Length: 280
Ligand code: CP
Image 1 (cartoon, rainbow, N blue to C red):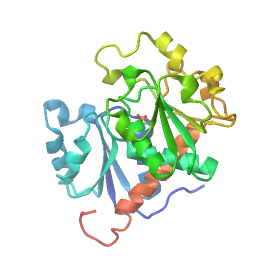
Image 2 (image 1 turned 120 degrees about the horizontal axis):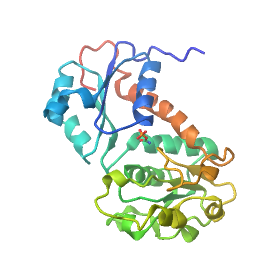
Image 3 (image 1 turned 30 degrees about the vertical axis):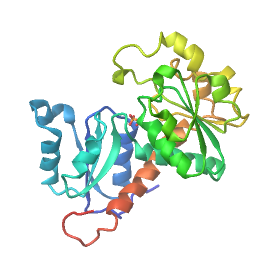
């Protein structure tokens, strides 16, 4: 089947990822190519960033090549917003530090809506390392806007200090946290963002907070299992539930990632036809 369209033919999109990524970077590339755009994946590891060039100098350098959009992932919260103020093309946040991952939340919401028809009134439990998770923050915002109720579930050491201001129910154990929920969204333990020890041990973390068949029983019988990926099997999720095709929508989330990113690119730069230059 020919998946390619020409809505973004002649447009140039640059992927600028300062952190590792499989799903987000690849799906932005697939999305852009399916819309007919030219895509440049800047390899940060072999770029002049390694010679000491700053984020903003790198951005201004790329901007001088007149891209229509730059997709940015960065380990510092707020870095993408800062960059967007310096360039004159569209900038898409592909994840900034512990702050936001907006296209992940959009693809999660789309996945749920496809399965449930609407998010209105659904009870969603986001479980695990809430503190370090940009996915949790973006989902908490969007799910509530879409009419869902949100619980966060995890150990006190992995709860953000401002969790009380997020409009969510907070649970410190899976039994009460998963009770009667429609959606169980598991999060990766983000050890790369941790300085010091936040959990006693991986096996103890899995025992109390890892999703397995026994803990899933607390949720509604038809509750969907979600995970933004990458998964750490045996840490926050057991393979038996991750691979349960009746309940797990993890691969559908990835599929919807392409759809959502095509929509974002089209919304941002698809209307620029016949314009010269940037300014999206
Ligand atoms: N969900 C997500 O952001 O995955 P990647 O880190 O592989 O892009």
